[in-house]
Image (cartoon, rainbow, N blue to C red; front, side):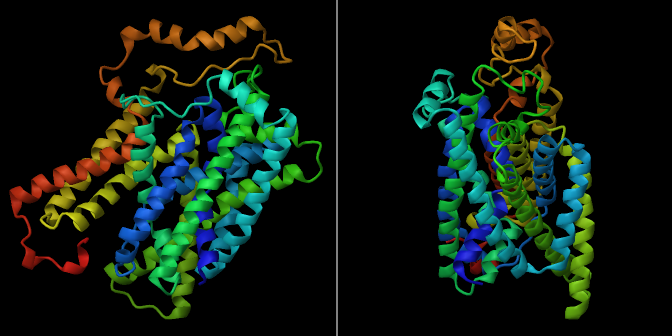
Length: 482
């Protein structure tokens, strides 16, 4: 495959509806610290291109955390379709899942890549349409930023060292970079992309082009979040119960602003669907390849003809697609989709990335150290994640103030003041009932991946030195960096 199509495929494989819907809602609720995510995508792309990718082109490895991520990706466009059409959200989930599973099972990796290229064009058109019409609706860029600044949404200098603070410069740069590094450096979907390019140089170029594309999409989604806040500054649809989920704020905005423009709501829906279908199709195709090469042929020792391998790939794609649909019902209870995505990445991807880093950079680490370090990290992160889900009603609401004072419904100024003061009242009244470990459970989701990687390395090295650290002559130099 050529460099540019593969670069676009890498970009849209992970610029899913999670970014397209979750990005604006994240800025709407918590401010523009989210924009640092664009920088972290660039950092991770450079590190992967210069350090990990050349080594991984010589190796064969797998990753299975992706199945749950695809469930989140499937849930996101279902939210948009439900909001814009009024259809039941679970009917939307099943319909989208079935369609995507079908076309993933009938095409190979090259078909997926060229489909991704087309979908990248649709995503760009959809984002530009939303930005242009949105700026017109709020009377321009300057006014949108002025309103957002007055509402506390414009912030780039939060340098707090408190790990419980949702977005800080340190959390975004360290946690965000490691999270993207796990995506770009240790993900089976991207490994397939690397192998499709003939040269290592071409693969590096694809990653760097992807970095620019990903950063631009993140910045566009952040700008949309600022525009949406300026538009709903004194009438928040979520607090006014006009939408069921905060992640529906973007589709709701589009229907209000673009609803009378023929064709534009359809462009928006196509944009959201393109983001998700590209991710799910790439993931299903990759996981099917993993099951065939590493499980069916590798562990079970079976041999397959090309025709039978193609049939098995289709069967596995259908099975995996069905699992994604079922997992989506669980994902709906995990809160905002950006938070849910990065949290699950930290829980499931973090230990995987940790064990690779342990093996590549610490020659003394042995098999027992890696295995025990992996499970120690997985258990710790599952404990923190599940604890956060169970106790989330006990945590202080960290979102910025929202108002409904000028809504056309029966809300009034009193309701608007209630929204502003709700956090303080709730925290005070429930202070005596909070879980004693609430401080641990309140750690920002951005620190999940660093905690996971650090745990694998620390526990892995301790166990390795206690059992039997590997000697230089016991190590294959091809498996070590540098």
